[in-house]
Length: 487
Image (cartoon, rainbow, N blue to C red; front, top):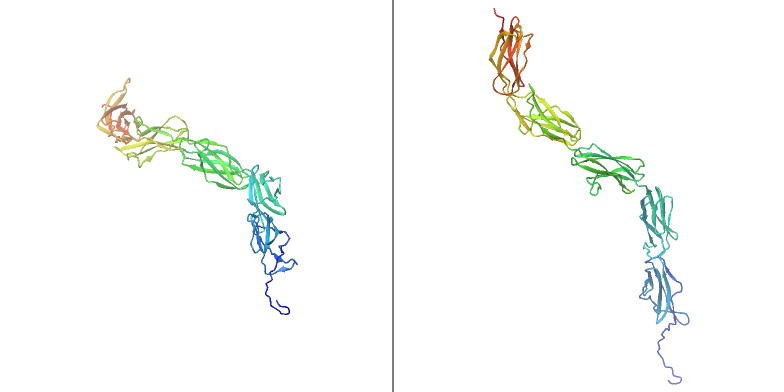
């Protein structure tokens, strides 16, 4: 370079960063997910800002409390501390970040609850921050009952019923409160009563339930097992929530005769399940029936017979009869009581209006509360009206035995025609028979051959007489004959 001569020079000025300003205040985030924008600048040694020099941000890779973008946006992740670093041109500074979610709401679950006196229930409290995030980190939490005479609560949120009533149980963290409305009830009381209307296939179960202030349903359990371990349950019936006894009843069916059943009343509802004492009943047995032979000793009637064992329940008996061998159609006699004993009771009934020379079928029937029993079917054949052999009728004079008085000795014959028949003579002093008398009746049996019969009467001034034969199918009279004294 020559003196006095000006020579132009070119050079570039590079800013020299002496420090970085990142801020000194603690960055506090009170909700998970909350963000904040951090800013920083590069400074000359003079403290002036170095323009156009970018500042970048970072946190350690293992930071759990917060994340930080290079542009300085910090996001809260979890309770804890993080140290943010801002750097420019190799010069760095730090700034502290603290994340601590602030409780803004408390939700107690369940929000409403029903407890039986003496029982306990655990409540849970869910704490959340302003953004609705659940706070799982430890926070101070206190439990309290608004009415300790009704329900108490321990430090872990377990509520215990003391007496029937309502209580508000609260969970408190700082100034934030959440709660649950707890209703304490008594367990319903249940009484099982004796069954009624017991038949061979059904019964009416009875009981009472006192809801004791809690909504309650009533039902029954029954089984042939005394422990009711494999029982049938009836459909529950709503009984309300009063404090007085409520009658409960249920008609059950499909039971087996001569079987012992066990049962009890049951209540269910918000007050829990309660069961009454186990009672029992035995379904009765139907009667035992035996159809007997026809009574062949009764004159002018067909009497059917049988026997009935009531089997311990009041029973009635009757007979069915008709001309159809299966008794698919039949007539019935009047019913008669046979008591409620355990031994066979003989029964019989006359039947009339039968057709002659016809086969009839019959059986004994009986019923009690357990059902109806039918005996075996037997049969008999009716005979016809007697056949009087009137031309065999005669009368003759003779001295009455042991006296000198004249008598008339009368004789005739008749066929019973298959039905129990009796025969006799009617006699009178005039042919009109307005006043008449009769000899003793003679039983001719129930055969089909002719049987003779006799009778006698005082002759007097003359005697008119006729033979008579009768059975269940009819009566026949012979022609009037007469005998007079000699001369």
